[in-house]
Length: 385
Image (cartoon, rainbow, N blue to C red):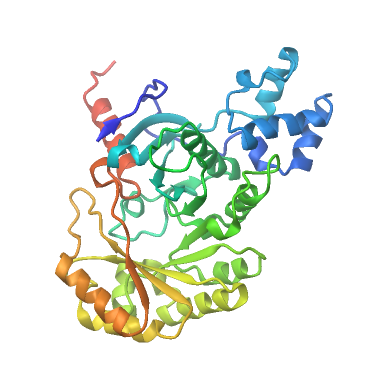
């Protein structure tokens, strides 16, 4: 594990904080909205395109580096278009630098995480859509922490832009220098922050200076199964991949592992997923965390195979990354291999996710939980005034 140098930050967020949305940022607006804002400041409309080109096209987030802007107006434009949204707290690297996890403090003290993963043929970032999560899945560190608030569109996008800049710097050896894939699999339930997530996707896939210029097919949106939102996503005319966090094929167990299943049962969730596949032509990714002696029994593999056989779906088995003090643990490798065999024998495409970042608190929410624990411990040790 390697700690990477970042801007020094003090952990002085108040113990009890009131969640609030951040100031407006250019990534909250489309290009026309940015132009209207700039002209409202008495500047020519093309200044909005200049700033947007720096941010999305050149991955420059520091207004002082935008030297083609007049010095007299640079600060004013920066205040209105580029307020600081993410303050780095900690950044860790492993896998010879190919995996990098960043912990950010937002303007109101909330903590979120992002991960960059470099491969020989691509660079992927995993971004957060909420500070915390309200879905309460008991094996997930973020779910255990509860929901603080939704992120703004720009807070979501800024994670990707920052990590795209890391990739462009050549810091991820052995990988292309351009960010190519974004997965909404960080902290939070993306479809519970629906409008801002959709706006963020449109920024990510629009060409510069409107946005980052990624392929829609290289965007993945994860959900625990918010059925109305899945149907709504299918009508957005977007070619993003839907990743359904299933984790159990039967309602009895899924009610426990994914509490929202008490509202929308397995059959209804899968019907929504097949509707998405039919309307978009996109294969659905079925996410399934392998939890020892909980959901890894052979009969559950057979049931999952029957549910998915003949469908436009792919199973992504995830070796559980246990959270500290958790009663949950990863399935043994022989059990995992038997699960894979049974799914493939049923004709279901199945892979096991590459495990990365275990030594840097790779599971979602672990780094934020550790920071909160450290901060609370520090405060507990302070002498009273």
